[in-house]
Length: 492
Ligand code: HEM
Image (cartoon, rainbow, N blue to C red; front, top):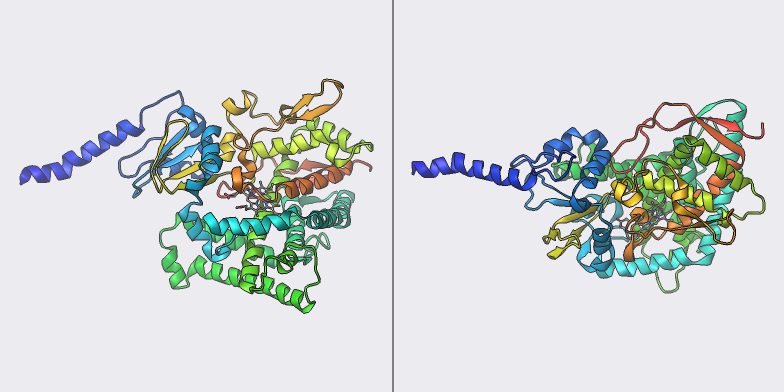
């Protein structure tokens, strides 16, 4: 009997410790692998690096054999696989799309906000929703409408604001300006309603709807790291009470717009919501479905574009030679926006280093093996860190830290002054995801970013009014203290 106690108390833990140590702590390269403690796994290392989690994961993964690392966490039967290997990414997003679904936890934490709509659904349900959504996204009238509202927002609001800021030598928070700009456009695209947030500078209006939206998303995502959120929701306490209030504000606001649309007897507007309401095959009469679809649309269409634009202007402002080339191109009156290859490449390059969605992942619904030999058990999560992939020496060469749009370009054979764009496949550069579930708004996002970039650089130059950009490395790459700049008018 004493032997059994001895075994249970000392020898078993010691064996577990040794097994876990040998399995997880052998060093393959020069980079010190994070230490996995028995029972705790990599939790201590993750906690220590929590304030620069994306940079740290990039170092760990890019220094691991086949760019794949297994993170062990307490109370988990299986580790989480994090892989920056394009063959593995292609496997989960495309080749075995059928067995890699949205991560269960992600679906649970976002469900109150998104419900069962295109963002969270899987299988047949998702296929049906995607079909409806892509019909709207690919319609010519929708694209024309989006181009028009983007151009109007740029020429009637953004450029006049920059002009006043330049004339007054004012320091502005460009991230806040771009947030207002993007919300104005996203809500017009999605709901046909103008929030007019980018108005009356410097006495901007409050941004209640945007605040509720961002807060709802943030609280929902933070649930991933909390143990007791379901109890807090049940008792309507703390952040869960805030989330409930945010969601109800968002739903009320959208409902009002739907009711107004109906009152105007479905005017056949070109926005996404009107498109759904008037879809001849859809018969979308159910308010709850229309609200869910609008929320899913807005979730996809604003945060990503704000982040892409903010880091784009930050990257260019730190690279004067690149800015000179962009300015030369956008000032060339013979060139159409579609021919601005260098500017196009500079946007790709900016998102390589600062991807608006820094981390993606799926969950296996059956056992599998990844192309690099990593074994996947049913229920295991496989993540692809886009932030790490853009910083991989293997994928981008030793000059990966440089912001160099030229890496996306080739000189044409016939005319050595002309560039051609050389795209990378969407599994080496999965910024917009890849495979059947690739981002539906990719072309729209590019059109918007290019429209802003060309119009702004034709006339303005930004001088950063802060030393470094500090960003929250949680779920998006938002700059914590904003992006403070002085606006300089090139014509003044
Ligand atoms: C730079 C801007 C953008 C980036 C980087 C981006 C990135 C992504 C990514 C990574 C996903 C996949 C999410 C996942 O399933 O894990 C996605 C999905 C999606 N995006 Fe975008 N996005 C951008 C802009 C937009 C815009 C402007 C719209 C709408 C106008 C949009 C609409 C969608 C939709 C509807 C989906 C869901 C597709 C599906 O699950 O079938 N995105 N996007």
